[in-house]
Length: 141
Image (cartoon, rainbow, N blue to C red; front, side):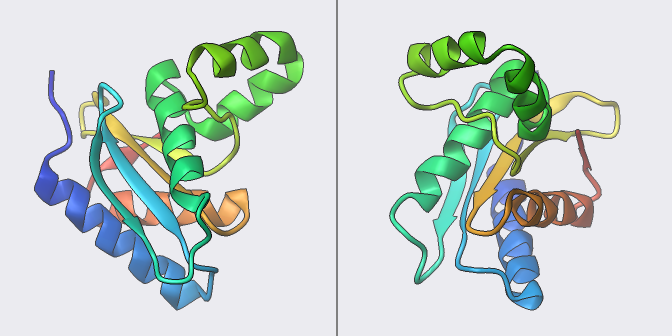
């Protein structure tokens, strides 16, 4: 099984922070997880609130665990709220089905990990992740 490398994870963080700053978004918490949900790299920008990292990680953890973006999980949660509440409880708070995290895939479509952000709107969080992933020539879903 392939996984995101530490070099890639660090480059993803740098690219995401650059995008957030150039777009004028609020201070971000950003996390890159490997395919097993382990933290590969993370950053909490100066001025970010204390919850930013935990939210970013929970979005990314849910995405990699369920194999879809946190946006897709949020949509699914609307149709089956009881299941997702139970899933969040089972995951001991590490699961958040809210827009802002995407899967990181190689050119063959294999999942390498997930990247999540928190600080802006869900769309802004997702945008900094997708922009960073594309900047490395990787794919997202």
